[in-house]
Length: 577
Image 1: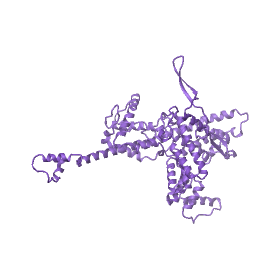
Image 2 (image 1 turned 90 degrees about the vertical axis):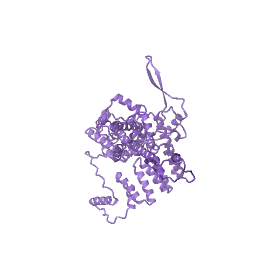
Image 3 (image 1 turned 45 degrees about the vertical axis):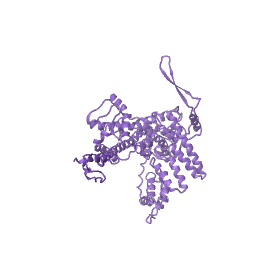
Image 4 (image 1 turned 180 degrees about the vertical axis):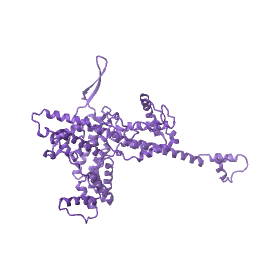
């Protein structure tokens, strides 16, 4: 008997059945094939096949997710480079106008500047999911498709790539995933293929020259050798911008696509098949326009697959483009999205609504109504889940209620997006009260890595560490230096890097304290767009101020009148403190 039916011989015959007749064996086989008695060998083969498909789908979704994270870091790095060229010259100009040509060179690393950069970057990063997701998925599908074609996998012209056809090539696919997993965490850094800061320096120098050339009496500090001072200040401010950007973790952003690629990705293969149906048409249109390469040149090819950068100047600043969709689910809020509003207005409305909840929470917090404050902070975070400061507010309220577990969770969520001193300090307090002393010490040391002079963190850390009985007594400058070195050793942190002295002597105006004030939103009118036909038959776009506002637009106007500070690269003033 064939091996696939060998198990039938082991069945115990039913004593009640008549053994006569040649049909009994056939009846036994038919009975075994009944749904109530499945074939264990067939069932095992199905299970193994489904397990292989599950492994394949999880590998594909993981590849898409890792490449998505790298794409966010790379594309936002392009954004930062453009900010350095377009917005930082104006920022430095406003600073040196009040503090003198060498002010920026001496104060580029001050907390006032870094806090302004943090606020503006946070507003940009909250859009990362909407702005990068579509491009990243298309690029990764293109790379996956090229991998399939390099292995002679057939691709349907209409429905695209079917994941089942990649099963024989799972090992190679897993190899690419292993390469991605081995990469360092994605961070923001200046793309090496983009140009220098020459354009920004030139714009800054021209602005300074134009401003002071009109004065009848030029200030003494602007009469000689101001160019190298302004240039150095601009370069140092740009370096500060990149350092602040590295405090943000791109893996905490883009939650909508991240959830789809993890918890909502189907293991049966339908998610990948749907991806092919959506992307295939666009990929084929791009190939028709740009040409098609053959053979092994296709493997893991596709825009974005280089991970570390395309090394082309065509990488666009997608933060300056108009969005054609919003990542906000209308069901997440009580009110639906007004289709007449632009994406920019929706993003602004979302932020203003969350800030209103936060301010109500702050009012309750100041009154000692911490439970009410928590309700408002949670509402703010629900509206804007990718602005980390709402979780920090939550943590502060939980600490007041001695709810250490929830305080730790809130801080961890905030730190997954932005590694801030407040987040680490509040989590250290919560962990200390939970008895997690070692974790609290690690958090405090994390603060001192980027804020070496944070006295609160030093005091808290000294309180957690065993007493230091060998500390030298500071009495002279050399003894002070020895004391600091011993203190860093006792705290378990690296010695702070010595700041390279400026080539220009410090003047009294360099000690001037400046304050960067973020301007509130204004009661800006809402405009309507109309297409008019000219006499020559061409369409012309015109705008008129809208008078009949929808309920959502009326709410927007009301929110704007509340003068909520709206961090932006062009909505601020610099004042003397």
